[in-house]
Amino acid sequence: MFSFRTTSLEEQLDKALQEGLVGCFCTQNCWDTQRGRYMYDIFRERGNLQIIFNPRDTELTPLTNHIEFSVEDLRELSAVVVEIQDVGSRYFNYTKDVMRLMEVLKDMKDEAPSLYIVDHINPAGRIVEGTMPASEVETNVPKVAHRHGLTLGELANLYYHEIGAKFALHVISALATESNKQLMPWTIAPASDIPGLFTCDMYSGGGLWNNTNISPAIGTARPYEYIGAPFVKTASHEPVPAAEGVLMRPCSFTPSCGRYEGKKCFGYQIMLEPGVEYHSLIHTLQLMRYFKERYSEFTLEEGFEAKLSDQVLLDYINGEVSFEEMREHVKVEEQKWIRKAKKFTLYDDLPYRIK
Image (cartoon, rainbow, N blue to C red; front, side, top):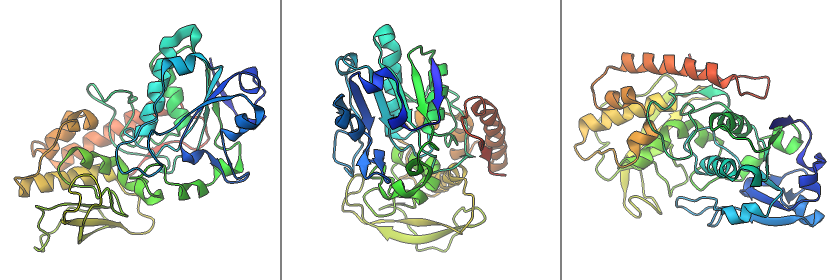
């Protein structure tokens, strides 16, 4: 059973929320800017908050972070309420955790608690980039484009039907409260490597750098906006691939954690002119081909092919297809994804591709 609710979580009269034991699956982005409290405080005040599932480490832990849970914890509950901030790309960890939760609830069958998702607007907007997986993808990743243009609630709607789930799923509209209509909660970073809105424009392509030996500058103030490595040489004036409205500034940085921790890296800052609709995936692929052609040290590492999940895009990086062939392939696949995505949208505005 699926429903889309247009009133706030607090106004829901379901017995599972009013009287049953509730688990809250959330990050710090469940802060209500109007009332000055977290989402789980609703149930704490009612006296039916059973457990909070949240990231295993502190808010800005500079490592891979996940939200952990167990089937035993879920069996005690009447409802699970999810409120995280998705960032618009299919490989965001906390979104994958929500998909994993949905798969576990599906397997629990009649024992599964009801699932409520408090939706937020997509900070990456309705822009679509990339292709749907052409091969086996990473675990708990829905079959969506690299930058999907959907909200978390819409993604859950799609995944619910994709996996053939039967448990009760209710999406609370992002427009149900003033707090979730606005972007003010974005002063709260949804993850240590996503410090602000600008990062979302970089992440759909930039997230792929995590499976290469080029650093996306995690451990600096500008992750995914800066890229580089100790072996990159930026002294020459050779032009670096960049689309119209995109500037590539030679720079250096020293990550405070992760790959190349404490080592000076040389590379580039990706700078966007105001108002530019940036296709991060295509630009990232261009840069990867550029690095591969110029640096024997550059490598694609474990997990890269599964994350990219498209042979044509991989062939482009390896110099086996032209830019025009790759771009046309992406255009056709984006159009396919938009047709599929429209079946699961819950709001008036619709996903679109950059022309």
